[in-house]
Image (cartoon, rainbow, N blue to C red):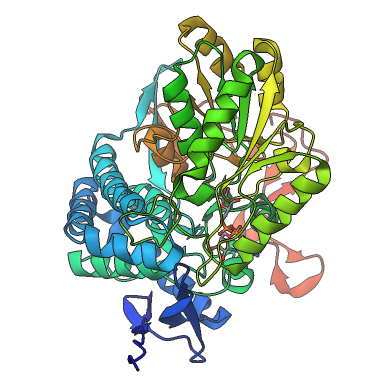
Length: 537
Ligand code: NAD
């Protein structure tokens, strides 16, 4: 009988205050490979006491440490070195990403390259960043400087562990803040590797920390802590709202990158093959576990039948398989809960009367695999068209005319992304201008750039990541006004060179009386009300 091969379970520690530590009570959580359902690692399950230690270390690093006081160019150098290490270790890190959350290796390797680029980008941008001088009246010089906010906390989801960490840590650290990162409980491993990289390149103690633990306790504590100045959150709308409420307690700055139900609009005059490809990439890349997924495909009725026919046959041919298998075109869902969510929504779609054109089942055997699934003839009012499913489930909605396409596209609580496919440039511009969404594409779907602002309208978020906007989010703005004359402001002139001000008398020290009859205290006031004094005397 062949020996059963046991998967190696790697123990990890978390990185708090420049030290690698276990949870204070020794508790751990298991990390599973969703392609096989095997345990691959064990990480500390932090306690609130551990989170307190991290916040104290962060406070110390920001209030007294060298990082915010270093030259921007020196901070940039360290971030650039971290980028180089991510590139050098890209294969290993991408493999780990695939193992912990089921992303195809070919997708994970792109994430590593994008993460490295994000660090390089902000290493350069922060050196270029500058304040401004303002044209103000009078002999005054007025200027604006940007300063770091302080202790920032990054709370991230499981779908892009390394990239989301980079999108937050790069601008935050570049601007001179310190950061505590709380990755999603199911996928913290590449973030722990990132902490190793920062330690290796010589980031000062407490500047970057990674705490692994349940969001409901650790994330909650960090979001509420009065010692934290900003929380940058990426995740679901539900938790985002909670974070906003927690932050409100001490009016801390909150950045939110939330969910979406993004429209992908195909006009009859689009390049047919490019639009088919874009519709498939829009929904099935990353197993549909992508916030900006083109999960509502809105198709011109003039080409609807032909488009849907081709789309369905292409979706049926997608090879679903293990994340590390080179032949796989779509990996598993992240875990059992996400699989259950997808199954629940497919049932809802059936119950709502949508036509299931393909998919609708999980694959037999180990691993959380689900078929690429397409519902057609969907009404935009249905729950499967309104709620984020976060899996490989596409809904297809027909439209008649440009105005109706825009109405359907905008009829959602979300406003993260959207795309339009047409060869008519002016129509494309009219439609993207009309879309109430922060990220739009014409004749493509999904490309993202560190240089361009990322974020949503409506319930898809607050604030922007990436680009110059992303750096601004991690800074406070201070105005400084300097009088250039050395002259007094000259407002309260009456009492000048006299011992009298208005109808109040300045009391000489020798005349000061005991305070309200209490012999133990003397009157602290050197100005007393004088009824008989005339103003100006
Ligand atoms: P989630 O909201 O369940 O969790 C996100 C993070 O919040 C995790 O680290 C989790 O541990 C933590 N958390 C959970 N409860 C918390 C609490 N009470 N207090 C503080 N932190 C808490 O989201 P998820 O399932 O990990 O990720 C999927 C969601 O993320 C989807 O809605 C997706 O659209 C969204 N997302 C958005 C973007 C974007 O850029 N807009 C990018 C990626 C993912």
